[in-house]
Structures are given as C-alpha cells and as structure tokens.
Image (tube, rainbow over all chains, first blue to last red):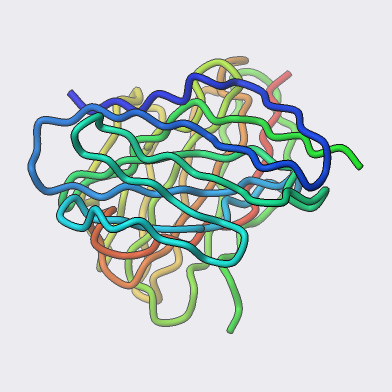
Length: 113
Length: 115
C-alpha cells in the first residue's frame, strides 16, 4: 500500500536558519512520482516540485533544495536562510503512475522574525 | 492565465441538507480532481474526472458524488450532510489525468461547515 509519512508535525525556526522537512514514503511500484506542496493560510496548495522515481538527482531552486534517496525511501526538503514568508504547512505527496495523490499529514513551519 | 476557481469559498449548511461545490479548472486543463482536507484525516482523494468521465474514486460513501461538464468545469455534491463532512474541499486541475504524470494546480478551496 502507498503511504507518506511526515514525522514532524510542527517546526519553529528563527529567520535565516536552515530547516529540513522530512518525508518518508512507501510504495511497491517501481514507477512513481513524489511531490512537495506548500499551503499558506489562504488554503490553496502551491506546487513546489515533482520528481519521478527514476530521477534521483537532487534539485536546487533558489533557497529550496530537495534530496531524493530511493535507498531510504525519503524525499526531504530543505529551505536555506528561511524567511517569515516561508511560514506555511508543507505537504509531501506520492503518486503511482496514473494514480491519485497520497499526501502526508503535513508539517507546519513557523519562521519567526 | 486564470488559476483554478472554486465557488463558493465558504459555506454553512445544516445536517441532513445537501450541498454542491463548483470548480473551474485552468483553461485548457481537462482533468479535475477533488480532495477533502480535515484536521483528523488530512488530505484525502475523493475522485477524478477527465473528459466528463469519472476516472478514479476514493474511499468515500455514495453520498459524495461529482460530475464534469463538456467545458471541463466540475461539480461535487454531498447529500445528507453529516457533521463529519465539515472540511476544506480542494479542487485540482491538470492537463491530463494521472496524478503523477503532470503537475496538478489547486484552487483555494471551499470551506464547508456543517452545523
């Protein structure tokens, strides 16, 4: 069965600190996709990144970076030099080919000035 | 380019009533998915529509139904509302169906409160 676990329910950091959000997934498929979404207080889920199971290359986009490790079934997300605007709930999600999104429980990040 | 539009944004209904929520996808997107978000259960998949056909369905009772029109707009209906149906209902649109095969863009959701 598919499952996504985000063990960190809440994280609080001070602005400019680096923070890593953990995501561990379970799937029996060899083809799958991993996602990170950001949910600000307004409610909509903002797409951050999509990764397929065959591409383990880490990715960096500005202050954001993602570490995908199939050996540990993890897809962790790091924000470098966090800012107050990064405060939100972050969701990791898994989708098998052609399937629905399975979300983790989310990690609420609070960045204090 | 306009994003995903969900209406209404907020809704208060009484137990036993029914409700219809609307979602207009991004222009050109033909796939619409619905998700329910609650504090206890998190984000759960309801169903997915593509070209007016339900392609996939989550584990929800038959009180939850949906449809998609020829212009790709979608509606979901919940009949005989229960208190536990109180949730944020999110709609996502994508070019093609299939979850991981493409990016899904979400609307701001409809906040349903059942009293």
